[in-house]
Length: 203
Image 1: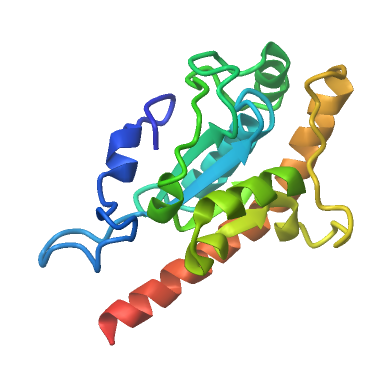
Image 2: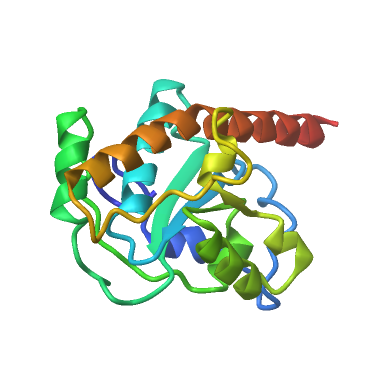
């Protein structure tokens, strides 16, 4: 995780395992701890939707005692807001519901980071399309998922998380509600993948 309220690792730690060919190393050195499961949330500018998603899911990860096994981050498709805090309306809706996003600073995703991630969570289909182009390999394209695909109540044809940037506070409340609806399914999918990893490593 990038540094902030809950602590964590800087982005350099997230990417340092990438091989020169863009792939992941075969595994941790003997005797070392398994690498964390890595999830990156991506939206347009990394100041509205993806920071909200990262903060909400991170809290759920902590509640379930997975913070030492899962590493979360968020990033932008574009560079319009690099270095900025989250949108004040995003921070306000998080604060009203007991979350703290004050640590967040926007950054742009580097395409090679997709190789270092286990899941890349897009906020809408436009982001997902871009990420799959950047992914370059089928293995990496398979990592790209829509956030709302983890919400059992979301219709298959309506899984975009609408951009609240040009709207009012109601749009940010809607984003938070939809993120909270999808978060348990996402965390359960991560937990299941951790179980598979443990079973594979112990075989």
